[in-house]
Length: 332
Image (cartoon, rainbow, N blue to C red; front, side, top):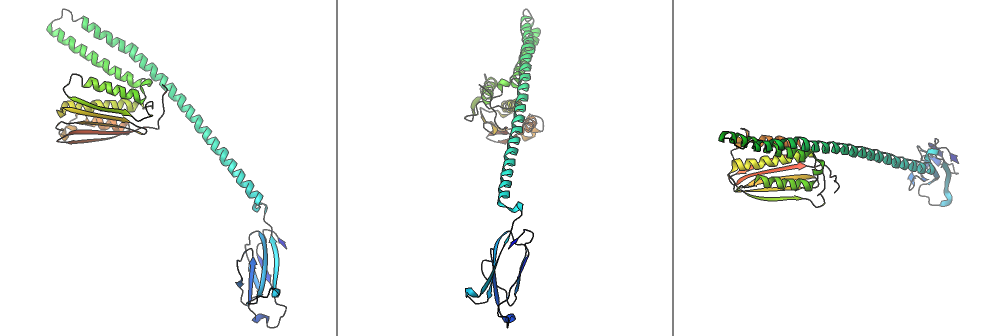
Protein backbone atom coordinates (compact mmCIF):
# COMPACT_ATOMS: atom_id res chain seq x y z
CA UNK A 1 0.00 0.00 0.00
CA UNK A 2 1.26 3.48 -0.87
CA UNK A 3 0.27 6.44 1.28
CA UNK A 4 0.93 10.11 0.64
CA UNK A 5 3.11 12.26 2.96
CA UNK A 6 0.02 13.76 4.65
CA UNK A 7 -1.29 10.26 5.55
CA UNK A 8 1.39 9.73 8.17
CA UNK A 9 -1.08 8.73 10.94
CA UNK A 10 -1.68 5.00 10.63
CA UNK A 11 -3.89 2.69 12.75
CA UNK A 12 -3.65 -1.10 12.26
CA UNK A 13 -6.04 -3.72 13.65
CA UNK A 14 -5.19 -7.43 13.79
CA UNK A 15 -6.67 -10.64 15.23
CA UNK A 16 -5.72 -14.32 15.49
CA UNK A 17 -7.58 -16.85 13.35
CA UNK A 18 -8.69 -18.67 16.46
CA UNK A 19 -11.12 -16.13 17.93
CA UNK A 20 -11.88 -18.16 21.08
CA UNK A 21 -10.28 -16.45 24.06
CA UNK A 22 -8.62 -13.91 21.72
CA UNK A 23 -8.95 -11.13 24.32
CA UNK A 24 -7.03 -13.20 26.83
CA UNK A 25 -3.99 -13.53 24.58
CA UNK A 26 -0.90 -11.33 24.91
CA UNK A 27 0.49 -9.69 21.75
CA UNK A 28 3.77 -8.23 20.57
CA UNK A 29 4.14 -5.90 17.59
CA UNK A 30 7.01 -4.38 15.62
CA UNK A 31 7.05 -1.80 12.84
CA UNK A 32 10.20 -2.42 10.81
CA UNK A 33 11.64 0.90 9.75
CA UNK A 34 10.72 2.44 13.11
CA UNK A 35 10.99 -0.10 15.96
CA UNK A 36 14.36 -1.77 16.55
CA UNK A 37 12.74 -4.71 18.44
CA UNK A 38 9.41 -6.24 19.41
CA UNK A 39 7.09 -4.06 21.51
CA UNK A 40 4.66 -5.41 24.12
CA UNK A 41 1.11 -4.46 23.13
CA UNK A 42 -0.62 -6.28 26.05
CA UNK A 43 -3.98 -7.73 24.97
CA UNK A 44 -4.71 -4.89 22.54
CA UNK A 45 -5.37 -5.83 18.92
CA UNK A 46 -5.00 -2.25 17.68
CA UNK A 47 -1.86 -0.14 17.33
CA UNK A 48 -1.51 3.44 16.08
CA UNK A 49 1.45 5.36 14.68
CA UNK A 50 1.41 9.15 14.28
CA UNK A 51 3.76 11.38 12.31
CA UNK A 52 5.61 8.65 10.43
CA UNK A 53 8.29 10.04 8.17
CA UNK A 54 8.35 9.03 4.49
CA UNK A 55 9.77 5.55 3.89
CA UNK A 56 9.04 1.84 3.63
CA UNK A 57 7.52 0.01 6.63
CA UNK A 58 6.56 -3.54 7.48
CA UNK A 59 4.19 -4.16 10.38
CA UNK A 60 4.52 -7.48 12.22
CA UNK A 61 2.36 -8.97 15.01
CA UNK A 62 2.59 -12.19 17.02
CA UNK A 63 1.35 -13.79 20.20
CA UNK A 64 3.79 -12.97 22.97
CA UNK A 65 6.47 -15.61 23.36
CA UNK A 66 5.53 -17.42 20.15
CA UNK A 67 8.60 -17.57 17.96
CA UNK A 68 6.94 -19.66 15.28
CA UNK A 69 7.34 -17.63 12.12
CA UNK A 70 4.30 -19.29 10.56
CA UNK A 71 2.10 -17.89 13.30
CA UNK A 72 2.85 -14.23 12.62
CA UNK A 73 1.15 -11.66 10.45
CA UNK A 74 2.72 -8.83 8.50
CA UNK A 75 1.56 -5.83 6.53
CA UNK A 76 3.82 -3.67 4.31
CA UNK A 77 3.18 -0.10 3.27
CA UNK A 78 5.07 2.91 1.95
CA UNK A 79 4.67 6.61 2.78
CA UNK A 80 5.61 8.58 -0.32
CA UNK A 81 7.59 11.79 0.45
CA UNK A 82 6.46 15.24 -0.71
CA UNK A 83 8.51 16.82 -3.46
CA UNK A 84 10.37 18.99 -0.95
CA UNK A 85 11.29 15.86 1.03
CA UNK A 86 12.88 14.02 -1.89
CA UNK A 87 16.64 13.52 -2.09
CA UNK A 88 16.97 15.38 -5.37
CA UNK A 89 15.28 18.45 -3.88
CA UNK A 90 17.65 18.36 -0.88
CA UNK A 91 20.66 18.06 -3.17
CA UNK A 92 19.37 20.94 -5.29
CA UNK A 93 18.75 23.04 -2.16
CA UNK A 94 22.30 22.39 -0.97
CA UNK A 95 23.72 23.33 -4.38
CA UNK A 96 21.61 26.50 -4.59
CA UNK A 97 22.57 27.49 -1.03
CA UNK A 98 26.24 26.85 -1.76
CA UNK A 99 26.05 28.89 -4.95
CA UNK A 100 24.29 31.72 -3.10
CA UNK A 101 26.94 31.76 -0.34
CA UNK A 102 29.73 31.65 -2.95
CA UNK A 103 28.39 34.53 -5.04
CA UNK A 104 27.47 36.54 -1.93
CA UNK A 105 31.04 36.10 -0.64
CA UNK A 106 32.41 37.15 -4.03
CA UNK A 107 30.16 40.20 -4.02
CA UNK A 108 31.23 41.20 -0.50
CA UNK A 109 34.91 40.75 -1.40
CA UNK A 110 34.36 42.81 -4.54
CA UNK A 111 32.78 45.61 -2.48
CA UNK A 112 35.69 45.53 -0.03
CA UNK A 113 38.17 45.55 -2.89
CA UNK A 114 36.46 48.58 -4.44
CA UNK A 115 36.42 50.32 -1.06
CA UNK A 116 40.11 49.56 -0.64
CA UNK A 117 40.86 50.97 -4.10
CA UNK A 118 38.85 54.09 -3.27
CA UNK A 119 40.73 54.45 0.03
CA UNK A 120 44.10 54.09 -1.68
CA UNK A 121 43.13 56.65 -4.30
CA UNK A 122 42.02 59.02 -1.55
CA UNK A 123 45.27 58.47 0.33
CA UNK A 124 47.22 59.10 -2.86
CA UNK A 125 45.36 62.40 -3.34
CA UNK A 126 46.09 63.35 0.27
CA UNK A 127 49.74 62.41 -0.25
CA UNK A 128 49.91 64.64 -3.31
CA UNK A 129 48.43 67.55 -1.34
CA UNK A 130 50.87 66.97 1.52
CA UNK A 131 53.78 66.88 -0.93
CA UNK A 132 52.69 70.19 -2.45
CA UNK A 133 52.25 71.78 0.99
CA UNK A 134 55.70 70.59 2.10
CA UNK A 135 57.28 71.93 -1.10
CA UNK A 136 55.52 75.29 -0.80
CA UNK A 137 56.50 75.68 2.88
CA UNK A 138 60.09 74.79 2.13
CA UNK A 139 60.45 76.91 -1.01
CA UNK A 140 58.49 80.02 -0.04
CA UNK A 141 58.46 80.43 3.75
CA UNK A 142 61.78 78.66 4.29
CA UNK A 143 63.61 80.79 1.74
CA UNK A 144 62.09 83.94 3.24
CA UNK A 145 63.25 83.06 6.75
CA UNK A 146 66.74 82.21 5.46
CA UNK A 147 66.92 85.61 3.75
CA UNK A 148 65.89 87.32 7.02
CA UNK A 149 68.70 85.50 8.84
CA UNK A 150 71.27 86.50 6.22
CA UNK A 151 70.14 90.13 6.27
CA UNK A 152 70.41 90.26 10.06
CA UNK A 153 73.99 89.05 9.80
CA UNK A 154 74.88 91.64 7.15
CA UNK A 155 73.37 94.45 9.23
CA UNK A 156 75.62 93.56 12.14
CA UNK A 157 78.62 95.21 10.47
CA UNK A 158 79.59 98.28 12.46
CA UNK A 159 76.85 97.72 15.05
CA UNK A 160 77.42 98.54 18.70
CA UNK A 161 77.32 96.09 21.62
CA UNK A 162 73.60 96.62 22.25
CA UNK A 163 72.77 96.29 18.58
CA UNK A 164 74.94 93.20 18.36
CA UNK A 165 73.02 91.63 21.24
CA UNK A 166 69.72 92.34 19.51
CA UNK A 167 71.08 90.98 16.27
CA UNK A 168 72.21 87.74 17.88
CA UNK A 169 68.82 87.34 19.54
CA UNK A 170 67.02 87.93 16.24
CA UNK A 171 69.37 85.60 14.40
CA UNK A 172 68.88 82.90 17.05
CA UNK A 173 65.10 83.27 16.85
CA UNK A 174 65.21 83.04 13.06
CA UNK A 175 67.41 79.95 13.20
CA UNK A 176 65.08 78.34 15.76
CA UNK A 177 62.06 79.16 13.60
CA UNK A 178 63.78 77.61 10.57
CA UNK A 179 64.45 74.49 12.61
CA UNK A 180 60.82 74.27 13.67
CA UNK A 181 59.77 74.82 10.06
CA UNK A 182 62.02 71.95 8.96
CA UNK A 183 60.32 69.67 11.47
CA UNK A 184 56.89 70.63 10.12
CA UNK A 185 58.04 70.02 6.55
CA UNK A 186 59.47 66.65 7.56
CA UNK A 187 56.19 65.68 9.24
CA UNK A 188 54.00 66.74 6.31
CA UNK A 189 56.14 65.26 3.53
CA UNK A 190 54.72 61.75 2.74
CA UNK A 191 58.09 60.39 1.64
CA UNK A 192 59.13 60.48 5.32
CA UNK A 193 56.21 58.34 6.48
CA UNK A 194 58.02 54.99 6.53
CA UNK A 195 59.68 53.60 9.63
CA UNK A 196 63.25 53.65 8.37
CA UNK A 197 63.18 57.40 7.69
CA UNK A 198 61.49 57.99 11.04
CA UNK A 199 64.28 56.18 12.89
CA UNK A 200 66.91 58.12 10.92
CA UNK A 201 65.25 61.44 11.77
CA UNK A 202 65.03 60.57 15.48
CA UNK A 203 68.72 59.65 15.47
CA UNK A 204 69.57 63.00 13.86
CA UNK A 205 67.29 64.86 16.29
CA UNK A 206 68.98 63.28 19.33
CA UNK A 207 72.38 64.05 17.88
CA UNK A 208 71.53 67.75 17.66
CA UNK A 209 69.99 67.84 21.16
CA UNK A 210 73.08 66.35 22.82
CA UNK A 211 75.59 68.16 20.64
CA UNK A 212 78.31 69.83 22.77
CA UNK A 213 76.73 68.51 26.01
CA UNK A 214 78.61 66.60 28.70
CA UNK A 215 75.66 64.25 29.20
CA UNK A 216 76.31 60.81 27.70
CA UNK A 217 73.71 59.48 25.27
CA UNK A 218 73.03 55.79 24.66
CA UNK A 219 70.56 54.92 21.89
CA UNK A 220 68.89 51.72 20.73
CA UNK A 221 66.72 52.63 17.73
CA UNK A 222 65.44 49.80 15.57
CA UNK A 223 62.65 48.55 13.31
CA UNK A 224 61.29 45.01 13.32
CA UNK A 225 62.65 42.97 10.42
CA UNK A 226 60.45 43.35 7.37
CA UNK A 227 58.82 46.52 8.71
CA UNK A 228 61.46 48.97 7.44
CA UNK A 229 59.13 50.47 4.83
CA UNK A 230 55.88 50.28 6.75
CA UNK A 231 53.99 53.55 6.96
CA UNK A 232 53.65 55.47 10.21
CA UNK A 233 50.67 57.87 10.38
CA UNK A 234 51.73 61.54 10.31
CA UNK A 235 49.99 62.33 13.62
CA UNK A 236 51.82 59.46 15.33
CA UNK A 237 55.10 60.51 13.78
CA UNK A 238 54.72 64.15 14.83
CA UNK A 239 53.47 63.48 18.38
CA UNK A 240 56.08 60.81 19.15
CA UNK A 241 58.80 63.18 17.98
CA UNK A 242 57.46 66.00 20.18
CA UNK A 243 57.05 63.63 23.14
CA UNK A 244 60.65 62.48 22.76
CA UNK A 245 61.93 66.07 22.59
CA UNK A 246 59.95 66.97 25.73
CA UNK A 247 61.18 63.87 27.60
CA UNK A 248 64.81 64.64 26.79
CA UNK A 249 64.29 68.31 27.61
CA UNK A 250 62.87 67.38 31.04
CA UNK A 251 65.89 65.17 31.71
CA UNK A 252 68.38 67.87 30.73
CA UNK A 253 66.57 70.61 32.68
CA UNK A 254 65.56 68.85 35.89
CA UNK A 255 67.32 65.50 36.38
CA UNK A 256 70.97 66.54 36.63
CA UNK A 257 71.79 63.27 34.86
CA UNK A 258 75.18 62.15 33.60
CA UNK A 259 73.79 59.65 31.11
CA UNK A 260 70.53 59.25 29.18
CA UNK A 261 69.28 56.10 27.46
CA UNK A 262 66.77 56.23 24.58
CA UNK A 263 65.19 53.07 23.16
CA UNK A 264 62.78 53.23 20.24
CA UNK A 265 61.27 50.20 18.54
CA UNK A 266 58.83 50.13 15.62
CA UNK A 267 57.04 46.79 15.33
CA UNK A 268 54.20 45.25 13.38
CA UNK A 269 51.40 46.45 15.64
CA UNK A 270 52.92 49.02 18.00
CA UNK A 271 55.64 51.56 18.64
CA UNK A 272 57.49 51.67 21.96
CA UNK A 273 59.66 54.45 23.35
CA UNK A 274 61.69 54.27 26.57
CA UNK A 275 63.77 57.15 27.96
CA UNK A 276 65.76 56.70 31.18
CA UNK A 277 68.34 58.77 33.05
CA UNK A 278 70.61 58.26 36.07
CA UNK A 279 69.73 61.56 37.71
CA UNK A 280 68.09 62.21 41.02
CA UNK A 281 64.53 62.15 39.72
CA UNK A 282 62.23 65.13 40.14
CA UNK A 283 59.57 66.41 42.48
CA UNK A 284 56.12 64.96 41.54
CA UNK A 285 54.58 68.34 42.36
CA UNK A 286 56.40 69.75 39.35
CA UNK A 287 53.87 67.99 37.14
CA UNK A 288 51.15 70.23 38.56
CA UNK A 289 53.33 73.31 38.03
CA UNK A 290 53.54 72.62 34.30
CA UNK A 291 56.97 71.13 33.61
CA UNK A 292 55.67 69.40 30.51
CA UNK A 293 54.33 66.09 31.82
CA UNK A 294 50.77 67.22 31.26
CA UNK A 295 51.56 67.91 27.62
CA UNK A 296 53.21 64.51 27.32
CA UNK A 297 50.06 62.78 28.54
CA UNK A 298 47.83 64.83 26.24
CA UNK A 299 49.97 64.03 23.22
CA UNK A 300 50.10 60.30 24.06
CA UNK A 301 46.31 60.19 24.53
CA UNK A 302 45.81 62.00 21.20
CA UNK A 303 47.40 59.06 19.35
CA UNK A 304 45.87 56.34 21.54
CA UNK A 305 49.12 55.72 23.40
CA UNK A 306 49.83 54.77 27.01
CA UNK A 307 52.42 56.78 28.94
CA UNK A 308 53.99 55.61 32.18
CA UNK A 309 56.47 57.63 34.26
CA UNK A 310 58.58 56.08 37.02
CA UNK A 311 60.79 58.12 39.29
CA UNK A 312 62.98 57.22 42.27
CA UNK A 313 66.43 57.90 43.66
CA UNK A 314 68.08 56.10 40.72
CA UNK A 315 66.53 58.35 38.08
CA UNK A 316 63.45 58.83 35.92
CA UNK A 317 62.07 56.40 33.37
CA UNK A 318 59.50 57.21 30.70
CA UNK A 319 57.64 54.40 28.91
CA UNK A 320 55.39 55.08 25.91
CA UNK A 321 53.46 52.46 23.92
CA UNK A 322 51.50 53.51 20.84
CA UNK A 323 49.32 51.09 18.84
CA UNK A 324 49.85 51.21 15.08
CA UNK A 325 47.32 50.37 12.36
CA UNK A 326 47.75 47.28 10.21
CA UNK A 327 50.98 47.79 8.26
CA UNK A 328 50.89 49.25 4.77
CA UNK A 329 54.13 49.62 2.88
CA UNK A 330 55.60 52.45 0.83
CA UNK A 331 57.54 51.85 -2.35
CA UNK A 332 61.26 52.21 -2.37
